[in-house]
Image 1 (cartoon, rainbow, N blue to C red):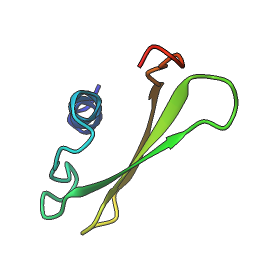
Image 2: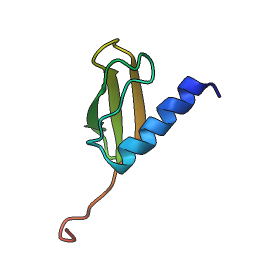
Image 3: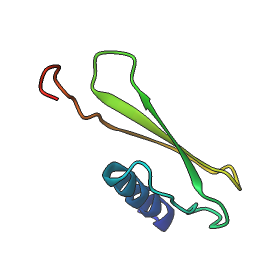
Length: 74
C-alpha cells in the first residue's frame, strides 16, 4: 500500500474518533479537509464520509458503519 493510501486510512481513523477534527490535506499540505458525513438512504446502517481539500480540491470518500441508537435507550 502506498503512503497516500495509508494517509487517507489514518485520516478515516481520526474522523471516526472525532468528526470535528481539523485535518491538513495529505495531498498538498496547504489546506484543510472539509468533512461531510452523509447517511445512506436505505436501511443499512452506513455513512459516507466525503473529504475535500479546500485548497487543492483533493477528494476521498470513506464508507463506514454508522452508530445505531435504538429509540428509548438514549
